[in-house]
Amino acid sequence: MNIKDKVSQRIINIKPSGIRKFSDYARTFDDVISLGVGEPDYDTPKDICDQAIKAVQDGKTHYTANRGLLALRQAICHYYKERYGVEYDANKNVIVTTGSSEGIDLAIRTLIDPGDEIIIPNPGYVAYESAIRAANGKMVFLPLDEEHQFKIQPEILEATITKQTKVLLMNYPNNPTGAMMTKEELAQLVPIIKKHELIVISDEIYSELSYDHDYCSLASFNEIKDQVITINGFSKAFAMTGWRVGYLLAHEDLTDEIVKIHQFGAICANTPAQYGALAGLKSCENDVVNMRDDYRRRRNFLVARLNEIGLPTFMPEGAFYTFSNITSTHLSSYDFCVELVKKERIALTPGSAFGSGGEGYVRISYAYSLDELKKATDKIEHFMKTFKSID
Image (tube, rainbow, N blue to C red):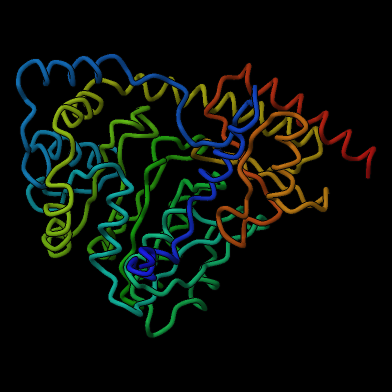
């Protein structure tokens, strides 16, 4: 018997993460400087760790409510009201999830029936496509381009929508491009979302990492608030990637259904980690600001250096990635990264990992020390000079 024949075809059709695939390849070489994985290089702030440890010591190691620790849900609601002017009810509109990735998966599985169309950005984060395939949904790709700084253009969105379109998935600040959309730019999308009665999954995991503009949550537009499922979490801004605490905010008619999947799949998020996240919201704002300021300094250095080297790079306004144009080399993004890691021991992520719209680019994370970025860019410069001399 061929055991693999028993596996669901829709799961077989899911491609492994292009980020992890290339990261694993890069690990086969010694002394590699990796700028590939989107993970803060900071340790989790001390107060978060202390409160999680205290929770364990105090015996707070049992299940919380399926929707999460009430005090944490209340703090999340307070945060969104104070930060973005959006009001939510802790008992109706919030589910604490095992990271924002679970939140995205829960939202997609709750909304999508086989054949339903969901519009996703191209280039876009790798997990979106796999979650849609697992739900038997139909992907429709929304092209984003460097000319418009990878922002959604209203006329292109309008042209992409069909009678079968149920969901639009947005991600700003954006992974992999670092693009941002201002309040004024988002406002141009609101009439389209309302007109077509779309549900929007708004992935806002990088909302705290906005460098040049105040962040605007899509749910702050009252006329479409009930149509928005907001996904956020603690991994990026609070340097808590391994803690796996995220959250989902939505109309109660949606959360009442979403929690059904969550309660049978995860029951609840890790309890001590929830207490740590609560401490993060209560007392770690300065830590977040300090990390963001440091990312901004790294961004400014990296963008200037890459442009100097000859890799055209627009200024990202959020997250901690640059999306650098490598078309002048006439290499595919994958081949560029392979040659770079072979010759210089520098690991980047091929843009093709993020969809066809990422071909011709490489994603570079600046969630690494300035010293590492300087060493890496010196090696990239050497590679580019050597490559040109061979060419």
